[in-house]
Length: 310
Ligand code: TXA
Ligand code: MG
Image (cartoon, rainbow, N blue to C red; front, top):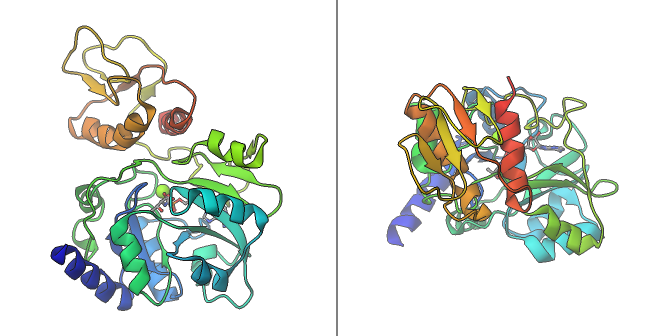
């Protein structure tokens, strides 16, 4: 606890100096900077090698702070009450007098916002006088980090500090819902779509096709381990890493279990960790068993399909 407190203070020190740092969230680790500062947020794009047109998510600890930057509406309040803090991001209208840096939004009039659940990041946000812009803390198109070591692997000495909050509990990025007009899901993620539909008592449309270049994260080669992936297969060759979701009678050293009991939350938590591990073991190919397409299984399948695109 004492250690956590001094680390949170250290995190604040670097952020106040307009530096980028690694922060833990329940979804994945973020590369965070002062969302009100052009200088601080421009560093995020440089470090991640992220195209400038791809806007950032801004993280808040409370509703009052959010209201300084965005217009909220009834749909937002319904979801906020049910899911926040948690793995859900809202796209809202940016207020004209908001101090959010133009780099965060790419000069657009909408802002993606979220309330992370991780206790260290919640405490950190509470002592800051600005919200945090934070994309996933990986080099663009690579696998998102779910631990301090993963972030280190991505950026090495290029970032000054990483707040260590252990393994991310959800393990996949937040679900993104646009509330600008009719609610639309922009990215599948850590909040199950079925639960969102229940709140609205109807099926919310999924609009995650990368028509224009403003909703990336949806691009080809995203979440990519950089090696070919074959999906929905029952067998693997010995030189292929085989990703499984339920226990097999016999096991082999190329088997990697997301879960041994088809537990989709457990599988989500393990996905990026296992993809990273497979890459480190220098496998050149990946095969994946069929994963049930419900709950977080939908998000897992979404990421695997994107990762499998060449
Ligand atoms: O779980 C998460 O959401 C993590 C943690 C760190 O919070 N963050 C994350 O950020 O995944 P990032 O930058 O890797 O993905 C954010 C996605 C991008 O695909 C971006 O295009 C989209 O959100 N986005 C950001 N602002 C947007 C906006 N105003 N309208 C539509 N999409 C937006
Ligand atoms: Mg990302």
